[in-house]
Length: 117
Image 1 (cartoon, rainbow, N blue to C red):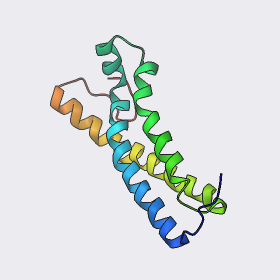
Image 2 (image 1 turned 90 degrees about the vertical axis):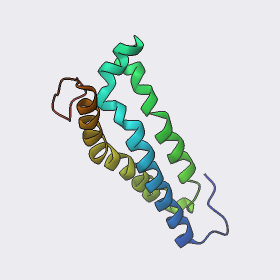
Image 3 (image 1 turned 135 degrees about the vertical axis):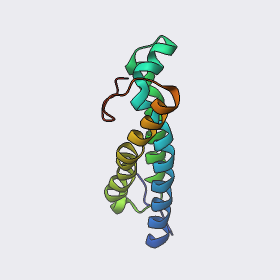
Image 4 (image 1 turned 60 degrees about the vertical axis):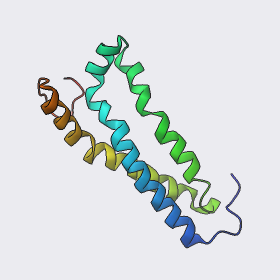
């Protein structure tokens, strides 16, 4: 992958931070259905795995874009930062969102770390 030519390392890292915050927001909204895969799959008459594809693609796209923002020698660290945003969204975004969704719909409650509803 070619290095970002003529870019300031600080500007590159600020851009990576912006993408990380953006992907956190996006992935929180995209990963929210992870806690609801069973009901979503049932409603759409597809497997949980097929329903799960709706949460995979956005993260891969954002990561691919972000890695072009920093010099090549910083790509491993930038990758870790981006995936940190994804993981944080998984931990901090999905359980509260799932709880809100089950409260709003009256769906049966199960522990927030499970995907069964």
